[in-house]
Length: 383
Image 1 (tube, helix red, strand yellow):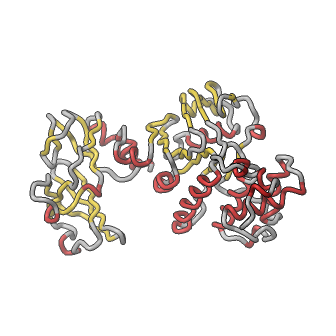
Image 2 (cartoon, one colour):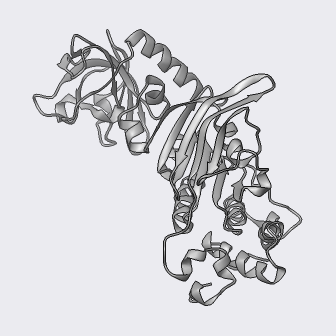
Image 3 (cartoon, one colour):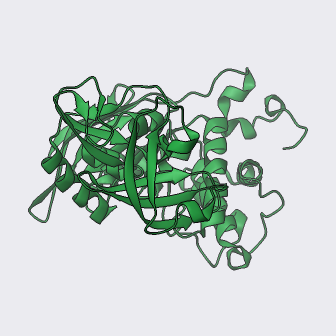
């Protein structure tokens, strides 16, 4: 409670035992080792392996049918496996039922009990964990403070906004001090502005509590904002696993490049980048050029590599102009320009010169352009 050190309240130490001596939160390592899942005769997961460090926030990102929710449910114990192992620290939990795995879970629908108060919902989770009745209210109130809903213990669920209900669901999941927190599309029901606010809030709460967390989303911005690492999934396998920055700057495949943000795919042949006719480090392959790497040649250094394109669409989006252009040999090109760019200079039909900004090396994938374009079309269609 505000102004009362947790070291003075043995009841509240049930929430965060590490608070007694100021040490870091005690979290668990979560490991999946070559997990396979078959449902309805179809193999859904094809040997998925993951290793989360204690206290890490990992998001599973992918299109519908990629296996991300199934992977989350494997961790939760809600879906049986036909092969592989699931471990919390060094202990296998693959044969444990969900109620014995010490997890907290927030569902997309929140799954709050409408006939109960806010506090009743949170205390229900504590009752299920056999926390003594005399301790439940103090723990529930502290959990509400954590999610910035102090004084809401007696409020009816029906009186809450969507964002408040989301926070109550998170408080209920955290109140029993679980070893692992699982988030299944927790922000999908919120509007854009509230969703962006809650992305930051969830990350703040997760860091404060220190619980190992696995989330599922199809929203790329959400994954990049909240996560320490992101696993991009596709057709029951992990396409790439890395930090948000590395996934964006150095995607391993064309599918990963196109699924996480926009990307211009340009052919590389005999060590030169098509369109710009500039040397690159790879001899053959497909280069990934992000829209923000392109600028109008008039604002770039005189020696910057450039290409001539024709504008097809110029969209003002507040923080930028999004330019869709056409190059005679490279096809569609997307550029992101500053919002103060003169609109008359970039109107549809206008021919402009785009320059590549920055001096860093061009990221080149090993896939050939025909294969890359087919992959890109697939990624665009399902993202």
